[in-house]
Amino acid sequence: MATCKGCGESVEELFVVKVDGKSKKLCEDCVDRAREEGEVAEASERAVQGMMDFKGRR
Ligand SMILES: [Zn+2]
Image (tube, rainbow, N blue to C red; front, top):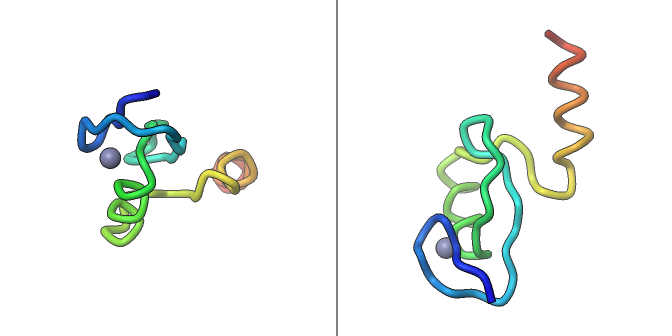
């Protein structure tokens, strides 16, 4: 069991996403919400690739 940093719910699975440039562990609901609000820079499965791309462009 783990606790979601977004809503404080205890969930079985957390997803690591980037919000405002920081990695956060959120439950699926919060990931969806953050994604809809445009707060997630990169989806978890693209996080590494996205970071490298981001660095390369700077
Ligand atoms: Zn949550």
